[in-house]
Amino acid sequence: MNYATFSSGNTWGGLLHVCVALAFYSSIAMASDDSRPNFIVFLCDDLGWGDLGCFGHPHIRTPNLDQLANTGVRLTSCYSAAPVCSPSRVGLLTGRSPNRAGVFDWIPAATEPSPRQKAARSLVHLRRTETTLPGVLQKAGYATAMAGKWHCNAIFNDPQQPQPDAAGFDHWLATQNNAAPSHENPNNYVRNGQPVGQLEGFSCQIVADEAIAWLQSHQQRHASQPFFLYLPFHEPHEPVASPDRLVESYRDVAANEEQAQYFANVENMDHAIGRVLAALEDQGQSENTVVFFSSDNGPETLNRYRGARRSYGSPGPLRGMKLWTTEAGSRVAGILRWSGKIRPGTENDQPVSSLDLLPTFASLAKAPIPAGLDLDGCNISALWEDAPVVRSKPLFWVYFNAINEQRVAMRDGPWKLLAKIETVEGKPMAKMENITTSRLSAVQAAKLTDFSLYRLSEDIGEANDVSKSQPQELERLAARLRNLYAELVQSMHVWPDQP
Image (tube, rainbow, N blue to C red; front, top):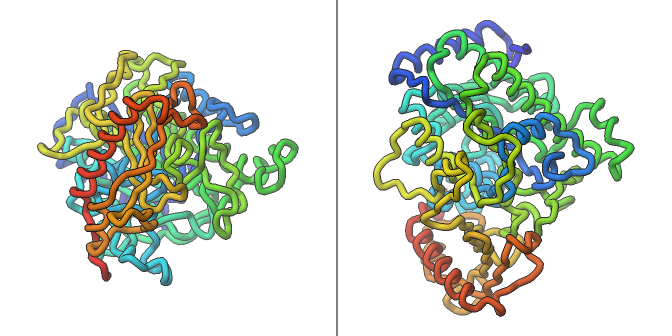
């Protein structure tokens, strides 16, 4: 085990800090309940629906995730909360559309130069007042930890904005956004408020090191206390860097060196996940741990921005890519395992979402959710029984900065509905990276128009618009989406126009 990641200079001092923190939080936790499971969430960054072996990639080797699917359920209609990173993460943590929390697009660091600070984007953060999954579990007596990419605030590691601990994490090792200068030997990690300097190795393995050491410390000192572990990897987001031995193994099948780097990047992440799962097994915790794997959004488009030359993610049969409201933007690979509860080696095509984690995990943990909290996810425990998941509202997305023109989408049963946003003057709504006070009235007055309807159970690639041949379904679903949009834009948090 590599404990070097616990401290930039003092290995045992770092471990002692973790142990003291765990002891403190254990002392205030409620009495443990052995029937309550642990939870681990693995979240990739920009992984395509078709990037895993168990989701059909012809070359990328992902033996650990393939085995996870063989021992759990492969979720073929799994969705992220948004087609882009920061909103997706906020949705996962809150169980609500990220628009409600005022996170509409990816969050640039406040230190980034203008014009990225236009529209008050330096103000955007996950507010302390939001109810979060780790916060709910922490209050119910769980130990909580994260390691990886945070990307839920503009001002990182600064008291001006809440940090991961404010969201309910007892222990955290994180970066604001991407690992820098790349996945290899990153120098921008912060642990519990303290920068750790340059670390050796690749980011996914550093995350695995942190997770394994934390699990071992927790097992040694507080084995009876259930835990929640959140591991949002940087891989395979740019700037991609991968071990030479893995890159070499793909050169014969890759189109070029850059693609070989991408393939190796996904496999390296798979190895990191395998190490964490092996540690869980060694500690005898596998049977009572719910493991969820997914991605924050679909794959990046090649050469969309400078530095994206290694973005060779595959959307599989899905239309679009990251930043689109079509399927490839938010339909992602999903795997769920709970030994003895979920029938192994199965496949489920019911729509499920990262929004569902909060209500589902809270139910399993016997953790109360604040009364009146308007969740957009639902409890998906019916999956355990191979039963239908019943939703009070369909999954829907409003992404004001989408690349495609139809920036509003809804998945309702087998149906996918897309719509454009039109101003009261009858013009297309301008793309927006953030919603501020001066923009709110226009957003609230806007209308949804130009609907397209697809029956995904027969048309996963959204190739055949059936809106004209299914007028009754179109009318029903369009009315439902209009109501969802109207309710959402009335409840969103918006930011002042000026920082």
